[in-house]
Image (cartoon, rainbow, N blue to C red):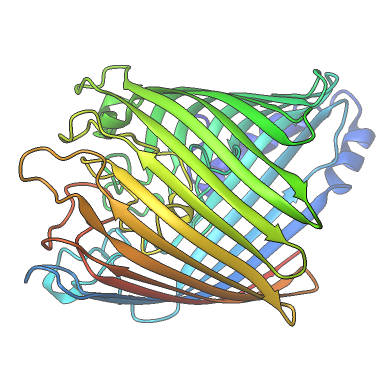
Length: 442
C-alpha cells in the first residue's frame, strides 16, 4: 500500500518526500513549489433511479442531490522531480434517499430501502504522487494517481461517478520509439468509487479499496496514417482478503482504432480482441475472450453514426467463468443504466447503434443497445437480456462550464432476479435513470 486514503497522513508523506530535496538547492526548490499549477473542479448532480418489476424485497427508487469539490496543485519540476496533490470531497444536499453503500447509508435497513447511487459522502486524497522526468522521453510516477488507458475499457478512472477511481501505483511512460507510447505499471490498490466510507471498506464488490499486486503493460503505436494499434497485458493479482479474487486473471489483447477519408467525410473503424484466463490463486479455472467490432461514419458538420458489436465471453456459463474488467470505467460501456457493471455469468453480447450531433452549440446524443447472453448454463438466464435507450444533451461554455441532462431506459427480458455480486442486476430489471448536472473547472 502506497498511501492510505487519509488527508493528513497522505499530505505528511508527500511533504516529507518533497522537502527531503531541499538540501540540494532550497531557493530553486521553492521556485518549483510555488511556480506550479492549481486546478479546481466543482460539480452538482441530481440523479433519479426508478426500478419497476423487482421482487417484493427489492429496492425500487432513489434520489440524490450531490456536490463534488476537487482541488489540486501540481508543482513545477526541479532537477526532473515534481509532485502533485489533489483532494476531493463529496457531500449530499438532500435527505440521503439513496443507497451509497457507505456505512449508515446502505439499503439494508427498513428505514433506508433505496436503490444504489454510488456517490457516498467522503473527503479524501484523490491523487498524491511524486514524478520524475529527468530521463529522456520518460515520465515516472509513484503514488496515488489517475490512470486511463486507451478508451478506459480495461483501466480507467470511472470519471462519471462523483468520487473518482484512482490507483496507488508505480507507473512509467516512455516515448523513445518513434510514434510509440509504452506504459508500464504496478498497482497495489484500486481506490474505488465507494470510498473509505464503504460499509465493507477493504473487501467485496462494494469495497472502497481492492488491494492487489497487479502489473499493467500497454504499447500504443501511431505511425500509420489510417489507424493506431495497441497491444496490452493486464495481470491482475488480487489479495485474498479482498474477497474478490474471482477477478484475479491474466488478459492479453490487441486493439486497432482509426479512420480514413471518404469524400469529405470520415470512415471510422475499431477492432479489438483479448483473451483472459484465471490466474494468481483464482479458485475458478476459466478461459474466455473479448471481442469488439465497431464501424461508423463522421459526416462533416452533420453527425457521427456508429454501429458496434461487443462480446464479453463466458467459458461455461457458470458463475465466475465470464470475462471481467474490474478496473474499467464501466459506466461508459453496455448502457448507462448500469445493469451490466458486473458481467453476467452467461457473458454478454451487446449490439449497439449511436448517433451524435451538435445543434446551435448543444451536443445531442442517442444510443440503442440490444443485450444477449454469450452462453447459458442450465436454467440460469435466458438468451435475451434486454434492450436500452440512452439519451444525452450537454452544453459547454468557454471550456470551463458545462450543463448536461442524461437519461437511460432499460427494458428487461425474462424474470426479475437480482445479481449475486456487483452494482447491478443480471439484465432482468426494468430501470429508468435520469441525471442533471452542472460543472465548473479550471
